[in-house]
Image (tube, rainbow, N blue to C red; front, side, top):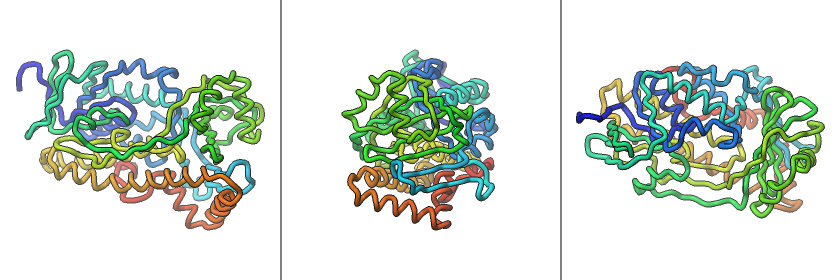
Length: 406
């Protein structure tokens, strides 16, 4: 090894929620990583950088506990129930975790808080080297190893490069991996609200032709996150509303069941789209999280898909390391890709189909949707299947999602 060169088991490009969780999962199993990010990671902890909140499915929460970081969800609001309606129609689909006494369906946490906790844990980990803010000057995916040269002249080497650098992944593009993608004619508005009546740890999702309107329980019990999908042409107008006018619109859309509402955080927006990589691997390269896939937030599964990638890739890499295999060998990447590509494809297709179904206007489509919700509500086997999907408990689950170390 030449002077100034640092060798680790993997190099991760992207220190966001998924990339940092992977580094911590690998660290818990004795594998080292170098995490590279162009951003000043401390600057990503402000509400202005990302005002969104995420639902951490119960299986993802089990993984955090298994790797020794279950305390990251302390003080968060559990999701004990989910109620789904077609607008304000009385017919509804009701998922109640209390029915089976199996614990919460998930937990709501602000992205900036989760990011801060992950970063704090990574800084205290012996086998995670953080390189941020810094730019990648060059990447050489050679026959025997990957060499990454940073803008400051530092040289990092590892058998495997992992792209966790988001929807617009430069690493994926440089590798020539093709992506299927399209944009929805919709924008998501996000904000936080305080309300008169407690939410009771219930997540509400109301479907309108313009898109889903979600009210998600936050701690304490009179605070919620709002994710409101609107048509692109209307987004700017809603963002220009003052706090009182915006609160009035949210009250109207929700039917007023939470009582008087006030806005507790500035509203922000982000465009909605779908993308899915043709393959998750190339020579000594693996894609995870948004670098591999991105979906409509209709079911709140985007981050959890990335965390399931983390669980599967961790198991694949730990198994390979124990067998003395080259972590960048094609067989290692192929096992991960086979495990995750189909599952992610199915979730992508379902969320896209649901969004298109609920966007159909008119009495006929509305009647079909309400009949469908009522049917699922009356059939226990269907309800259990949907609840398992919400928890992340379907398919061949990696050990971490079962709450077990690899």
